[in-house]
Image (cartoon, one colour):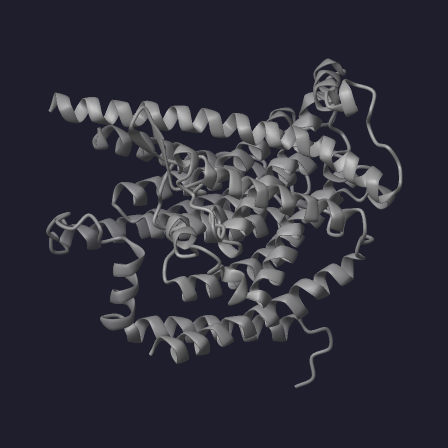
Length: 166
Length: 344
C-alpha cells in the first residue's frame, strides 16, 4: 500500500516538475510547481513528518508561490515579450548543467552508503519531538538560521525604504 | 486480521457518514447565510428584506440556486479556458477542506457506540487550517488572471497581497494561543476550555487581532477591496457568470462559517458552556452549543459588514503591517511572560 502511494506521488512529482520546466507560459510553470510541492508534502506525510508537510505547504505553496505568481501576473511575461536566447547560449547552458549533474552523480556514487533509517518510532516527526531536538541537539544551527532570517528581514526593510540615506 | 479489517471498515464508514453530514451542514449553513445576510442588512437599514419566496422568504436561497444554475454560462473569448474553469472549483474545494479538523463536540453515542465528532484529529490541526487558508488565495488569483480582464487582474492582485499581509498577523495571534495551551490540536484546545475557562479571558488582544484578520481573509467588508464594485466592477469575478460565480460567492460564505467555527473553538470554548455538559442529549448538546456560538459570530460578521465603510487600499496595508503585526508580536511577548510567571 505504502509503496503504491509512494510511487504515485513520485510519478506525479516528476511529471509536474518536468511540465513546470517545459511549459511555455510562466504562470502555468508556477502552477505546476505548486502541484510538485503538494506531491512532495505527500512524501513527508508518508515519512511520518506531518509537521514538516504542513509547514512545507504553508511556506512554499501558501506564501512563496503566491509571491511568485503575484510578480508574474504583474509583469505579464510571455514568449513574445521575453528576449529570445540564441542557440549558442542554449548549448552552453546545457553543457554547464550537464557537467554539474555529472559531478553531483559522481560525488554521490563515491560517498558512503548511508544505512536506511529504521522507522522504529512512528512519532518521530511530531511537533513535540521536533521541537525538543531543535532546542537541544541542534540549538546552535537553529539560532544561526534565526539570525540569518533577521538579517534578511532588516535588509528587505532597508531596500524597501523609499529614500535611502546612508 | 479480519477483525482489524472489520474495525477499519467500520471506522471508514463512520467517517464517510460524518463527512457527508458535515458537508451537507456546511452547504446548508452557507446557503442560509445568504438569506441571513439579506435579512440582517434589511434589519440594519430598516427594510424588510426577502419575503416573497415561501414564508418569511425562507425559500430565497433555493430560488437563488435555481437562478445560478439556469443562467447563461459565459466564457470570455480571450480567457485562459482551463484555468478559468478550474479556479472557482479550486476555491470551493479549499473552502470545504478546512472543516475536517474542527471538533464539533465530544462524542456521540449512536446505537451504544461512541462516535468521535471530529473527522480527523490531527495533532497539527491548527496548522492544517492555516495551510488551507493560505491556499485559498489561488482560486481568486487564477480566476482573476485567467479571465484576461484588467479589473479581474486588479481584484486578484489586491486579494493576494491582502491575504499575504493578514496571514502573518493571524499566524502570530494563533502562536500566542498555542503558547498558552501547549498544543496544536484543536481537540485538546477545545477540551482545555471546559466550563467558562475560555481563552478569550487570557487572550483578549489576540482575539481582536484574529477577528480582524479573519474578516480580511474572508474578503468581507470592510476588507472587500478585492471585489469592490465602485472601483473594480466586480473584482476578480467580473467575468464569471452562472454557477461559476455562484461557487465563488458560496465558497465565501463557507469560509465565513469555518472562520466563525475556528474563532469559537480557539477563543470561546468550542462546544463548552458553563452549566452545560457537552455529553447531554446523547452527545448532541456539544454541537448545539458550538453552532449557537458560530451563528452568533456569523451575525457579528454581517453586523460589521453593514455598519463599517470600506477601507482605502493604503489604509488596509497600514493596518495590516504597521498596527496588527506589531500588536500581535507584543501579544506574543506578553503571553510568553504570562506563561513564565504563572506556570512556575
